[in-house]
Image 1: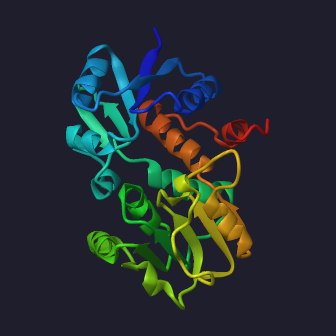
Image 2: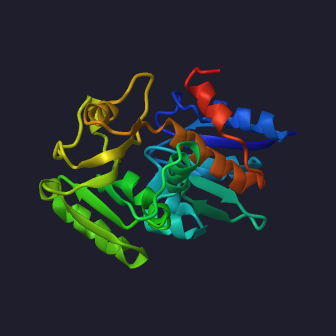
Length: 273
């Protein structure tokens, strides 16, 4: 019988994770099945425990359960601790659950390996101070960048998050109105503004010449933030589809000890192959 994995969230029918992991399994010759679980907001822990009791070996966690998964985990990676959220649960040999967060690794790997962005010595702006930002802090700070600035509409949230991560690297926080006159080599949108076809209120000239933009959201057409970057001469204006595939690959490696090749899967998801 194949080993069992799944993604749990609510809603969940739209999730691309089963197709991505099915391709990873085919590519690497791993005998596994990967399904979807519509999680019960009133009994997330019960859903997880039932899946594990039925032989499940691991879960991906999506909205709105990442914080609950963090609380449920018996042990956590450092990046999950910093994130305050877990998107990957691994059943250990003794039956306990280890929580990890692969979002930041997925972001960095997409930028660095798939697109060739060089982090060393750069100034990076991270927009938003919610869970998406927390999830990528540690991997970003480990890239060798010169400075990471968190900017948020409510400055106090950005400052609090920067204070949490400051011991780990060159990190500061501010409000969006404090960005006037600043220039960044990479601007990452970790807000949900794009869901309303909007962009955060940042200065038109805060992107350095030949700077890059990256939107964690993705879609069949360029997102609002991708269009913002294109209109301001970004060298690259990228969306988050590659991050989605790369974070899934990191989960697959944590579960199986095998790292799948991702470029062909990204092309498949974009309908390019």
